[in-house]
Figure 1 (cartoon, helix red, strand yellow):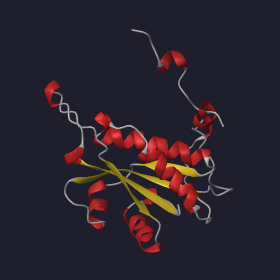
Figure 2 (cartoon, one colour; figure 1 turned 30 degrees about the vertical axis):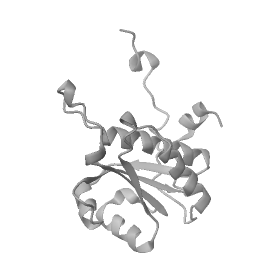
Figure 3 (cartoon, one colour; figure 1 turned 90 degrees about the vertical axis):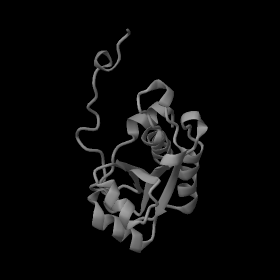
Length: 173
């Protein structure tokens, strides 16, 4: 599948089947994240993989954004390792941006492998950090739900194909 086909076919899945994700596919998804770029190659991002029934129940008790996916990745970053642009006086810190790059790579790799995903940020991160006993320097950027789409309810939303025109999206300056 070409990259443009991947970009067009990827969607946010909110209903997963009961089928488990094969370990080799999960490893490929994680490898895509590991190889992704980060600011100044600081690599502050790490992933906590949730697969056990106990931890899936725990995350689902905190947020509906885990849906019924058989795997939920907590994409996190270490604040002490992030690039900061102090010399530019704009308070930039790369943790969220680096996490977003890595999540996108993992999401696209999962799509290429026939898996469905949901990139989620509709939750209180500090509640999840507390429940999973994160050290103070570790921050949760987002969740990435991964599994196989439920064939009846797991398709794209009606809003999925709606996009701005190119003229609205990009302009020359």
